[in-house]
Amino acid sequence: MVKAIWNNEVIAESDATIVIEGNHYFPPSSIKQEYFKGTETHTKCPWKGVASYYDIEVDGDVNKDAAWYYPEVSELAKSIKGYVAFWKGVEVK
Image (cartoon, rainbow, N blue to C red; front, side, top):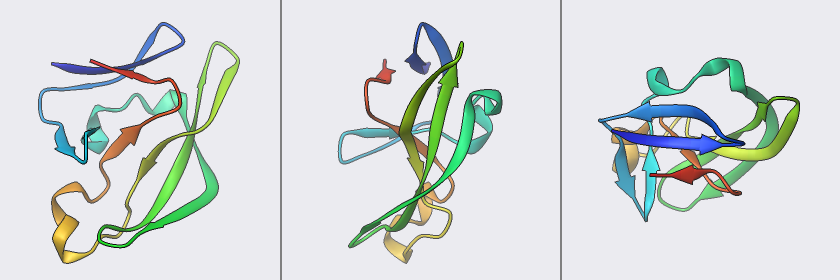
């Protein structure tokens, strides 16, 4: 079971993550929605598409744009459509 942990809280866990470019992408159903808030941030990956971001909030602390996902993907990245990945101090183990 792979877990994403931030601020001593498990914010996602799954035994069905997909690893791409060293990042674990978690199925949408595996994240604990109460810790995630959508943002207006977007970035573009040349082969995956346009990423959208979430702020993560645990116990009043906010980790800005610490999770991302691709709501629409290219044909090459269809396996991770909607899946969520982490950075900015989120521990994935």
